[in-house]
Image: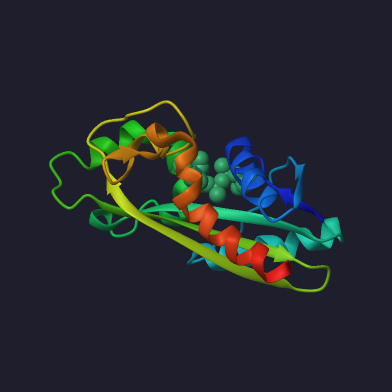
Length: 178
Ligand code: ITT
């Protein structure tokens, strides 16, 4: 079975490709950016984005919107993760968290699947902590500052794909269609 994943982010595609292979699914990468409407939650943004894109693509596809939610920052950057990563980046988050004791954070992934008729949503979450410094050189995005146990996602390499928010959302999605 083949499925089209719409994303501009190669790191996301590579991780999804490996998870899909375990279900016998081959992923096709449609490398493009799409308009992300403003919304109060990632779920809403992912659903609205997929609905808008379905008008253009017509064929079945899925996209995935992710975000990092830091408890002490009241869920920031959350839906603004992409913008925050491009602007203040990992160093900016580490600075914002300087001296903050509560380091709890989670990643949320929302998969929005357009099956040719309607959009379905699948979510996955992984809890961890914000590191006090960047560590590791694998992965992408916020991986160097996201601690899962004693290692950051960027130090875990392939092990990240066993426990990540993306893995959890995609497993729900793939098992619903296989
Ligand atoms: P597309 O929307 O084109 O898929 P994007 O990079 O804009 O790609 P998101 O909006 O979903 O993807 O991601 C928001 C930000 O969170 C972005 O800066 C990502 O690099 C980062 N991010 C997403 N998943 C991540 C992960 O597994 N590990 C670390 N950072 C991640």
